[in-house]
Image (cartoon, rainbow, N blue to C red; front, side, top):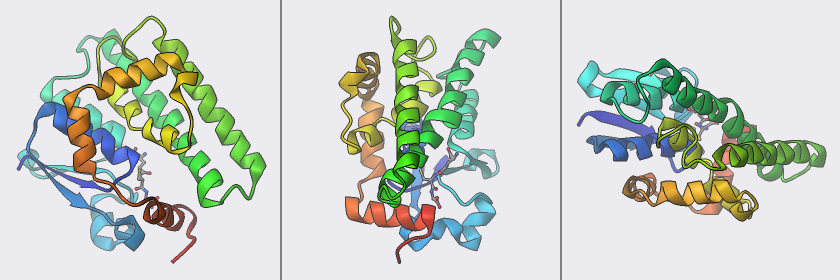
Length: 223
Ligand SMILES: N[C@@H](CCC(=O)N[C@@H](CS)C(=O)NCC(=O)O)C(=O)O
């Protein structure tokens, strides 16, 4: 087995599973039960002191441990020589949109879910702030994708990072048709066989358990 991925059915591990499936690399999945706070157990914190998934271990590189989904995608892209160009400008474009996802879309979406779902919209002003910000980011993405197939030239790790945050829009009941270029891009990306395989590998979790785990992990509520 080349890699071990520590995962659960949430957006950030999905990015890594898509990448591993794209590579056709042999890997083993280890489930981290967020409801059981496995991510805060001493053994796991030795792997990732930040107590978050995903974590990747590369067994072909002396069990090298990589944390942070964006850094994992960059590592795999470098190592396998795929899904990012090698010239400085091309690579920078990919990294710009990867960082945009890592610093913008992902965290803002996370906060929206905290205020809308985990805190059950008890602070409507906070929910509204993140709702507006995530929709603004989707509009930025929509404008970027007008007249282009992918976020940065060819299909790349920038796309892989953002794909994973589209299923939550559906969970919130949003219609991607409101951002037609994002919708077309998402359909293009998920038509790739790796996406279907990654979703299968990610597995599902009943919505009530997902929400209970999320509330416990993010705002310390629930048992
Ligand atoms: N920036 C990190 C974020 C990782 C992250 O927040 N992962 C969530 C699941 S998608 C998690 O581990 N949550 C558990 C917790 O909040 O305790 C990355 O992209 O890898």
